Length: 200
Image 1: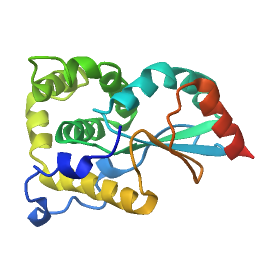
Image 2: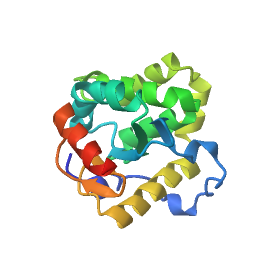
Image 3: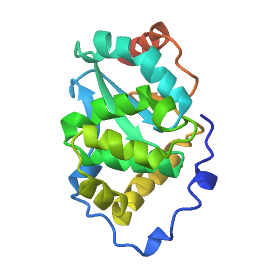
Image 4: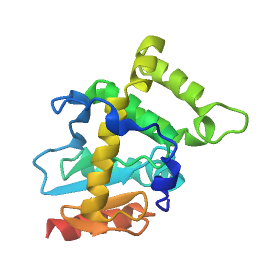
């Protein structure tokens, strides 16, 4: 998805004056699956409302997980890069879950994106609350997360830092070790080829 985050997030409240999320906040620690000592580390920058990210999740990622991540060949690192306020709230919810529930929740959101984010006559926020409840977050916890502007700003700050460092033009954006890959990875074979190159 092309990067239009500046305009899409422009309606956020003036968060600069809000208290900062504490540096030791466990919700801001890296989210990854696979072997942390793998020779190849793959980073994916994604937005939970990006249709291209959802397509990758449903068509390519299952085979990547089975053949490369679960076998210990790849350490897969998730980088939240929300392109709108709905995706930002979804990222906040995902990061508020226990670490081992992050990846399944992200997978669930991307796989059902057409139903909770883009279906006609639905309120995406209400749909997110329902899915968060299924993941174990109470209504009270949902409201607390939604009102946590310091946490919201912290995610935006991480995103801004990544944007400044890598000049990300759209999502999903991948890095294989330190090598960027900006085209769409439409097949497992294309993904595996990049892993092989990164492994040297």
